[in-house]
Image (cartoon, rainbow, N blue to C red; front, top):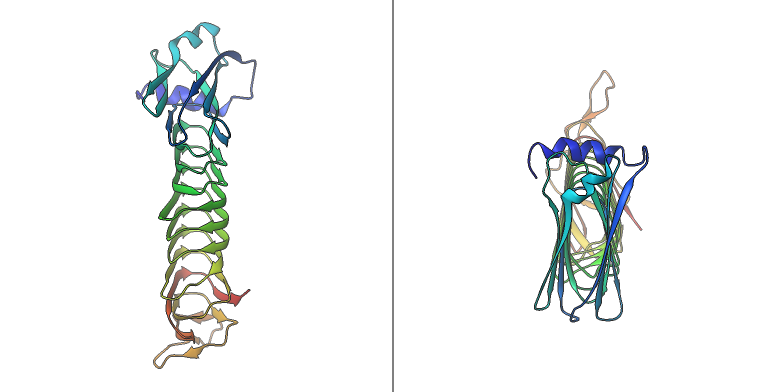
Length: 312
């Protein structure tokens, strides 16, 4: 995106509901095979993708602006067809045109899709093929996607529901919350700088959760031989584990309490922390313990926050 265009896009998108909009619609239907691939690259505007039946890709693009209607002509929707592939791209020929494009796309559920936007929300639902979605400024929502590979935003929240993949899943935002329900993958990597992480009904073999400023609330299974790491600089950590067979716990909090409702064997040398005489609370809390067969590894670390483990 040209540097001179970025401020105009930001102002346009922030005030999209203020004042009368000028619009222009572009519609297209294209046949594609069940294993086809669709990519959508946008600069300003929302992208909504829904999987369905049939062998057609339906593309509805609405160009809009709050400025002069003539500005719409400076933006085009470029659709390129190749064997088993459709590429959709927003092309801006003017500078500071303040024109956005909203996309609504329906495609065969088995197709793969890649969606990118600079300023706008991204939403993908009921797609069974490989899915990758990212935006710079906006929320990302993924629901009923069986092969989600990537979900990323810089300024916005990410919501995942009914997501699964045979491989690894990467989810990241700089400023926003991460929420998920019914997630399944071989490995899951979750990261946010400023925001909470809330995940329920999660199943994976490898898990990494990082939050600089935010709470972490995790609910899911612990599999034999799995490795699960939780790190936060400022925030509480709550782990609700579903019928774990066993794990080795390594938990640390500089200025917070550590509590486990699971019956655990404290390893020798584990420091449960102490309370200073002025009553400021526990300091330098550390707990190394074993639950059950100890086959998995759970690492929980926070500088400022409490750590709580419970069993569902």
